[in-house]
Length: 296
Image 1 (cartoon, rainbow, N blue to C red):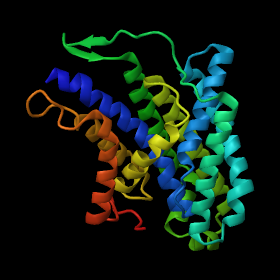
Image 2 (tube, rainbow, N blue to C red):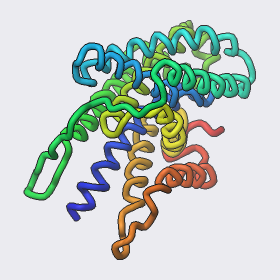
Image 3 (cartoon, rainbow, N blue to C red):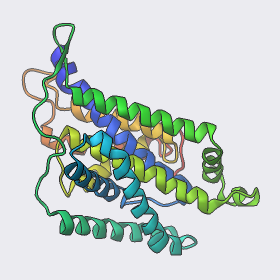
């Protein structure tokens, strides 16, 4: 039982927390800007490399460099919105989706040109696990990731439920036309959406880099699970995205657990297919998701 918790459940919670942070940005973009942002994974990638450069330059811990990396990433994201997405505000959705796909390729190529394609490590050395109850082993980095992710999720909850701009974001998500009629500054809401999405994507990418490594394809690899998490929870529902991310992460990890005999139920190399299977199953069974979000 402890082996299951140590090597499958806890890593699943860590991965699920990372998916949840990324999925919140996807679901906010869809609910407020009304398009599926395929460049969201590359926003994560850009944030990781900017934070990595800050860590290398200053020598501080990645969590200390994270707010500054997120700030720089958000500035770039706002510039991209102004230059590439704003002209498509009133265009058909498919045009904005294709634009986001093109932006995904452009950002990835830019990252590869500036930083190269070699694998990099956000942290150095090996951490000894912390031992609880004699047999429960938890890596300090996993505690850090889960704890920081919880803090960020609570911050998003406070923003959306208690602040004026958060309530404006919820109003625009429900009805953009009615939000305009009531005097809400929709462009301000759009900017806040990109700020929240960019900051959370950067955090998710940095957490993933702390847990594993930095790879120029990590944004694309994370895109499908994050979309699956958003769809599972109900597209357009930020709190549903959190639940969906945790479910996807845990199911991915425990799918390779040897439930019968000594062989894994699923080859670990096929874990990514679990997210795709869950996404397809949810679209067939309940297109609105667990928390009844917007239907495509």
